[in-house]
Picture 1: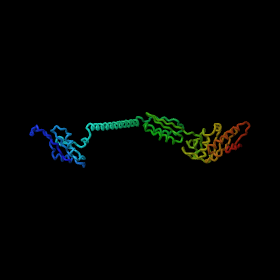
Picture 2 (picture 1 turned 90 degrees about the vertical axis):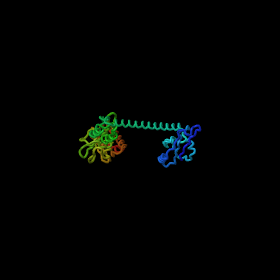
Picture 3 (picture 1 turned 135 degrees about the vertical axis):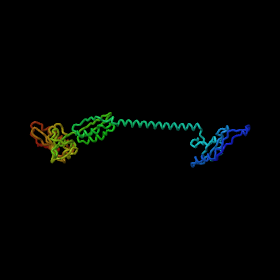
Picture 4 (picture 1 turned 30 degrees about the vertical axis):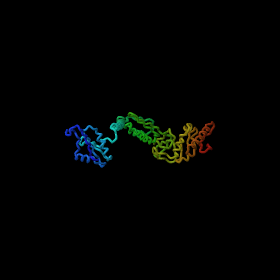
Length: 353
């Protein structure tokens, strides 16, 4: 766009020689610098110089000059006083937008920006507070200094103490309760465990132990204590009188946590089904490792009674055989009965000798 200048109106009543302000044309060097400064590959730009010594509004010059300019894609720079202080493109208002509308749009954008900044500041504040709270709760100020343990009777005290020692001194929020429970349940005596850490500095351990039912002699001369699944709970000296003693061919060398052969686990399962009457008279159990043959020795005034069960495998079969035994013992309680040495309940046809 060519540089133009609006001609000043001439007042016929004024002395032509009288001095008054006129807009001067910018120096060619200034125009060259402006052109170089704004030459960024966009369409050509022009400059409009507005007269400074007349009483006409500036819009008259702009409207007239823009109307005569056919390069609408170009950018116009305005020199109002000849000082070459051009208005930059990003500072100029887009054509056709009222100043009040432009100011309102600017205000709306600024308000939206302030709201976004407010939300960001609020989120940041919440995060800072949360991190601070977690840092305090995870500090030594809330470290566990007391662990209460309940339910332990036979559990190995050394293994239990190791778990407790790992919990003590740990911040409440950082106590690995699941890991502690898993370690406790690895102890043969422990059926299940529950670990709870509570503010400000307490923890508790609840243990449910397995029930010992039978005992058997090991290859080393020590007794193995078994639960109903045939799991070895402990290795002890001597023969525990409160448990049913199991004997079998050969000896087994098992450590705590291992399982005895199926015959021994079947015998232990049978003990859980004994009625109080029979349980009080059981002296011992003889079983083969494969469980194919099980013999129960009962006490009686006339001497021991050998009860033959046959196979010890299967819960239903065990119950049926125990029912036959209970009925036969009731019959033997009748006056005048002779001494009985053998009762065979392995089949539905019970035999007594």
